[in-house]
Amino acid sequence: MNTPKRDRSSRRRTAVAASLALAGTLLAVPYIAQAATADEPVTEPVQATPAELLREQISRAANDLYDTAHKDASTGYSNLVVSTKDSGYTLYWKGEIPAAVTKLIDAQRTQGLRISIQDAAYTRQELDAKAQVIARPDATVGGDTITSVGPSNDGNGLDVTVEPASFVIPGSQQELDALENDRSALASLTGGIPVNLTKMAAGTPTIMVPKAPDMTRFQASGYLPGGAGIGSPNYCTTGFTVVDPLTQVKYMTTAAHCVNKIGETVKNGNKDKVLGKVIDIQEYNDSALIAIDPGVKTSPTVYSEHGLGIPGGTTRRVAYSSRTFVGELLCADGALLGEQCGGKVVALGRQVWDRKNKHYRLLDKVEQVAGRYMAGAGDSGGPVYAGRTGTGNALYAAYPRGVISMTVDGQSCINPIPGVGKYRPNCSPNIWITNLENSLQLHAQALRLSSLRVDTFR
Image 1: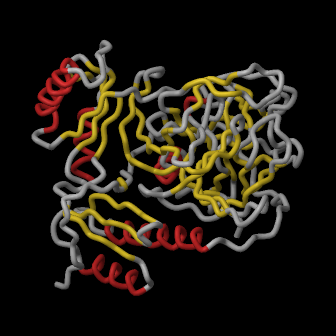
Image 2 (image 1 turned 135 degrees about the vertical axis):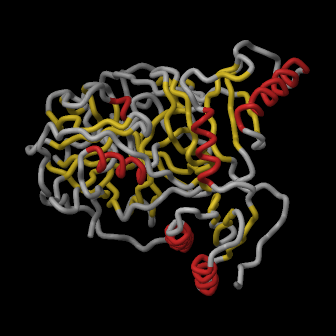
């Protein structure tokens, strides 16, 4: 068998986690959602930049590789990291690479992509399974709370973060001793799998109810896009419109912690218009599905640019959805902070401790590399996507990846909304986001639907 040449360098690389298919609870459908309505007119497409076209090519290639690699249930796939700078991706694989994967890689290389292959000690499935064993409610190690755990990006172990039970001076001998004690305690839980241990906080979702003249972010057009304000039950942001391909019934996504229970009414930011009712909640993925009220018009767009109270915003057309991969550059669009781009995916499939709700969530981590905040309080549930920008304000496409779940180490930032206080809480350059592919699969299972997909411009 001709196996693609592997780069056996010991240099550690960031990589992507394969998504696990999770079983959802079967629920009766309590509310009839709307069928498809007319689409909101938006500006014509603009020419993509070469860098944007390259990112899209790499993303498609990565998705094709993932699909091919998982046709065998016992796949040796471990991780994958994309890189526009390197014009391709790095694949981490345990064992011999199948002929079908080899053939695909060879074909992608003929298209100009640079593909590196690294040996991995464990498959993604092996590491995911061990992470789930460790991530139990109120899990501790050496007295410290385990705030997140998941496969390392090189497929050779687990990354674990802990929140210290008490303050210790960073870099002190006391901290070094505590870390070593935690590593020893983790060894009994991992069964010998190596652990990269970090002491830090994970961040928690925070709901803020601001007061301003207009909190809807979509009244001007009359259509409900992603990125619009939700004022009830909690102040949050809408994610993406999704559709049942068989019936063309449409729904709206948001974060699970933005709602309280199935069947409750969801209103717009001004709390003067019903958007729909909660039809399903997936706590583990921090994802909720809203059955859209028949009187609400939808559009396969996300509101972009500015946050609430700042004029001049526009919309992006939602394009095809695909899996998230480490190394991708994404935009997050919360109703309050507005569209913030420059976020880089640094980890996928992390079990993250939600201190407020006392359970772990399965999330992906995005860190800002452009020197700005990604989200703040009230932005939860907002859409996260890879974006094609074109030039000037002629924004075109949003390629869905997930919704905003938690900020990491949130802090106060300047509030751009006039008359609503000088500062806004829990702003952060780093966020945890849901995995949209997993979430839609879970919602479809719970509602006994064959599938759900993101509503896009055809």
